[in-house]
Length: 299
Image 1 (cartoon, rainbow, N blue to C red):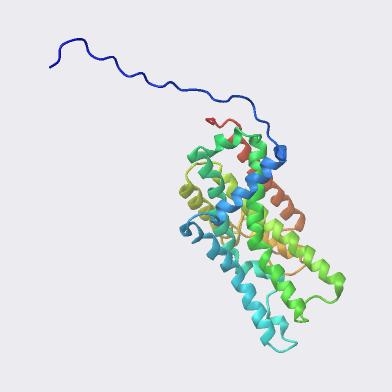
Image 2 (cartoon, rainbow, N blue to C red; image 1 turned 180 degrees about the vertical axis):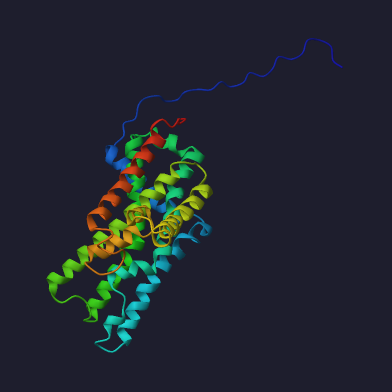
C-alpha cells in the first residue's frame, strides 16, 4: 500500500458539437398524393413478397398462377380443336366459375396482409405520423387490394381475349372487340370490388391475420351455402340470394356480358343485383370507417 491521497481521476473528454444548423430538403415535394402512391407501392410489394424472403412468395404467386391455368388451357384447346367447334369453350362470363376458388383465396390472403399487420406491428402509427390521415391511408390500402385482385380477375380473361384474337377466333370486327374488352374490364372490376370490400371489412375488425383470413375463407363460401339452402331447399324468397357474396358478382358478370347463366332473370332482376352490389360496397366501407375512426393509435 502507498501512503498519501489517491490520484485524481483522469479528465474525460466531453461531447462536442462541431456543427449545427438547418439543412433544406432539395428533393421533389410530392405531398399527400406522393404519400398515397408510396403506400400503394409498398403494399403491393409486401403482398407479393417482393424484396422479402422466399417463404413470403410461396402463397400469393401460386394462387396467381392458379388463376391463369384455365386461361392457358383454353388457349391451347382453341389452337388444337377444329374450326367451328368453339362452342365447346366456356364464354368469358363462364370463365370466373373456373377460378372462383383462386379469387376468394387471394382476397383472403391479401386483405389481412395489408391491414392486420400494420395494426399489430405499430406501422399504422408510423403511417399516420406522415402526411397520411385515416381516410387517405384506407384509400391507399383499398387501391392496393383492387390492383392486386385485378391481376387475377382481369389478367386471365384479357389474356384469353388477346390469344383468341390472334388465332382468328375472337370477336368479329374492331367494334365488337372493344365491346368485349369493356365488358371484361367491367366484370373484373365488379368481382374484385366486392371480394376486396368484404375482405377489407373483415380484416378491419381484428389485428390477427390468421383470424381474418379464416373468417374471409368461411364467410364468402358460407354465404353461398346458407342462401342456397334457404332458397333452393327451403323455398324462401329469391331475394335472399343477394346475400350470396360468392355468386353475386358472377351473376352480375353474366348480365354484363348479356349471357344466359347465373340466377334466373325473372327471380332476380338485374337492377336488384346492382342494388345489392353497391349495398355491399357501402356496408363494407361504412364498417371499415367505423373500425378505424376511433381506433387508438400510438405515434
